[in-house]
Image 1 (tube, rainbow, N blue to C red):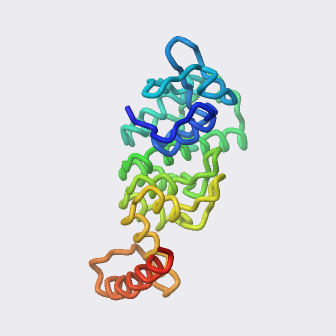
Image 2: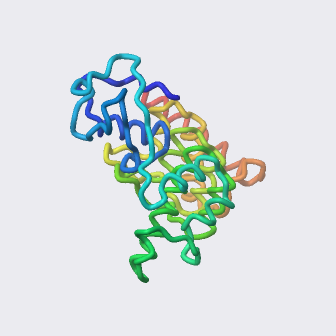
Length: 241
């Protein structure tokens, strides 16, 4: 259960799904929303059209086709062993009624999409072991959800510091903008995830200073650079306020 506080009667179902994409980490195109007994809520309709009342409970389900439900649940749980059997690597024997007809390029594209979705959800939930497994097996941390968000966007929004570190070390970008023009940095700021914002700011400046490898604050060289970067970060924040 989660509360979405910025809902209004003229909000479309698609807009609600995009907000749930961020709040729950489930790409909106996999969401199937229902209210009371009115069946599937259509994307372009408003909440007013479905008579959704303040405090009303909308149910979110995952589309069953192509094995998405099982994949989403495994990613939410952070279970790497389950994910390994659900078609997230090219050497997987997993097939669905749809994918069993795919060949070469089509098959690789299908696997890459599943690996990205699993990475997106695992990053949002802070399931570090699953994130590590997926990245090591080729999941694309620069991939984007249908609303333009990367796994780093949702990890930053939820304050998942370990996942942020891992994604950055695999090449995730703090400058990518989603469909609303938000970067992982600005999203972390909007969601009041100060530590996430500082961590990404530190990583950015460590790269600019020519330092390589994981940003471990326990390392004396990193700690020294961190103090320099922190002063820049604090002065930048003061100027913005």
